[in-house]
Image 1 (cartoon, rainbow, N blue to C red):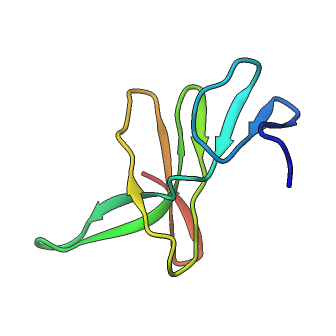
Image 2: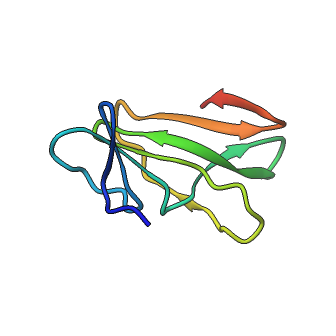
Amino acid sequence: MVDAPLRCGPYLLTHEPEPMAGGYVLAGHLHPCVTVGTRGFDSLRLPCFHFGARVGVLPAFGEFTGSHALPREQGDRVFAIAERRVHEV
């Protein structure tokens, strides 16, 4: 067990994705996903990395983790994981 946040260079590693003074937060609590449209009305929900101005949220890959579509702010970068590759969307 480690007290949060754990500093790792310029990053603050923590469970909750809340901005903190003193570094860029990397968190995993929300298990982010992105919805990508395909042909017709089909769509896919894919795990993703979601990087905002002060907080980055890391994906989860387990079967029982669920997923949460995060709102995108201007300037956010989102990277979906599909077929063992990472794609910026």
